[in-house]
Amino acid sequence: MNVSDDSEDGYVLVKQEDIVDGIACFMAAYLLSLKETKELTPNQLQEALSKTFSTKKRKGKLQKAWAGTQVIYNVASWSATAIGIYQNPAILKAATAAFWTSCRVVSKFL
Image 1 (tube, rainbow, N blue to C red):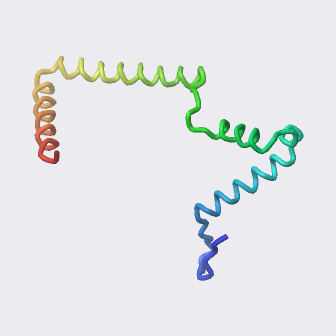
Image 2: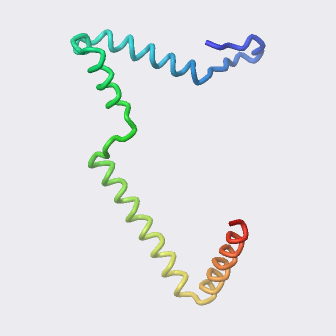
Image 3: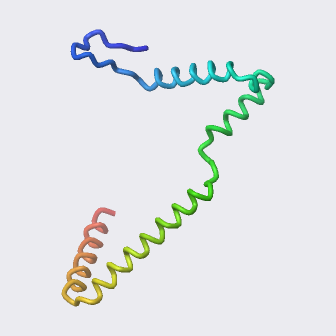
């Protein structure tokens, strides 16, 4: 581990490599303690680990439901905002002016 000797305040600087090494050592020790993994070949073990830690996991039903409720909430929120803006002509005029001004500012940066 990379530890700085001049740390007077008691803090220890831990680098990303140290964290990765620690997790790898823990995983190796844990896998060695399991009966099921002792029967696997190295290739089978590597395949199982890559599936476990892959970033392309499919969403479960609960995650899909949560994402759906977020979409519904956003649509309802934007709808309520739009209705409120269109019911008051002064707010509609101010919102339109702000929108076009921001479009002009953004277009200057592009």
